[in-house]
Length: 448
Ligand SMILES: NC(=O)c1ccc[n+]([C@@H]2O[C@H](COP(=O)([O-])OP(=O)(O)OC[C@H]3O[C@@H](n4cnc5c(N)ncnc54)[C@H](O)[C@@H]3O)[C@@H](O)[C@H]2O)c1
Image (cartoon, rainbow, N blue to C red; front, side, top):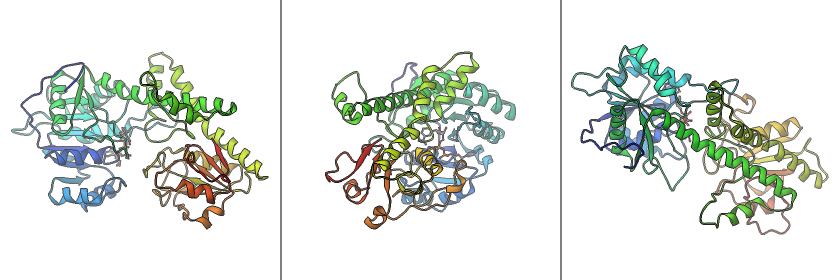
């Protein structure tokens, strides 16, 4: 164990059953990890469909096998429920619910606080049970755990934090679809409300994970997660800006980044794209911005990065217009195929995907849009784009691709054959450098 705040590994690994609240992209892999480490896991969610799916041994996340779920449920190692009173039999509760932005881009921690209200009545340790541990894993601003969540837990339970139950914060660093690191091998940062709270948190996660990294407070742990995501957001904005600059100079930014990456120190590659996507990078920086404003401090750097990243879809549309123009066509009435709807390669997650913004902008200009994504057969319900819900991916074959005036590569999934695309498509606008190895000399490719 490493850490800026050294905690001794305790012998008292007094955990046999943990509850995980929120069975999404973060919560479900965490359930599996604890089950595989020999603990009994209770998965809690307000979504009855997810609960039923787990209890029937069915996965609803593409990169998690149904076989893995059914193995665990058949052994009774994993059970799912909507009944929060079942927390009573658990030694720890790990909270993995959403932390989105509200209407005015302000943090919405209502899911966290609702969870607090749901579990509080059941937090008192039972006869013979040691104090329960509550750990918040959702990404959030500093002060959420030791102020907001603590307040709700105490007022709804009549208990005192640290004295009657333990409270900690440990951010999830899961990167769905990644194969080189997983929940077990990604080091876990954690901070406790008291030193005992931290000790208990270290004890629990040490059962299931290779490495834990304790820090001095829940606020340090909260700020750590935001810092990681802001670091990504700002660096992506930088390469997006460089992309536009180098494009004007006839220089390929991807080649520049690969070359710069040969330096063994002082450089870390980030890659440009059509805009930010996913549940983290477009959202989390605003959590800090909002909190900083509350404290009377400005976050100009973060806001500038947000501005640059948000301008990328418009830039891509300009390149699409240029590419069509070269073929004596306009965006209006052109058939455009968006290739890749998920927000990143090789996953089925479409949350905050820039592909939707591209569809919106191109449709406003009169284009006729379809999409192809091998991981997304049908567009799920999205609050912001209800009109797209249910639309189906087109077939991937020569006839289908040749029917489009232009193909816009928005997300580069590995399973797509880009050589084939180069031969079939009339024109390709490539935001991901997916066409870099295409050898067909007749292919019309525009980097964007
Ligand atoms: N997805 C990622 O890659 C990732 C990575 C690191 C951190 N995070 C953070 O983890 C948190 C969860 O993200 P996610 O991607 O797993 O979200 P998700 O939307 O996939 O899953 C959240 C789950 O919580 C459930 N839920 C909502 N309110 C609830 C309540 N009151 N009680 C019980 N269940 C409730 C939802 O039904 C859903 O199943 C967020 O704070 C996110 O920022 C996500």
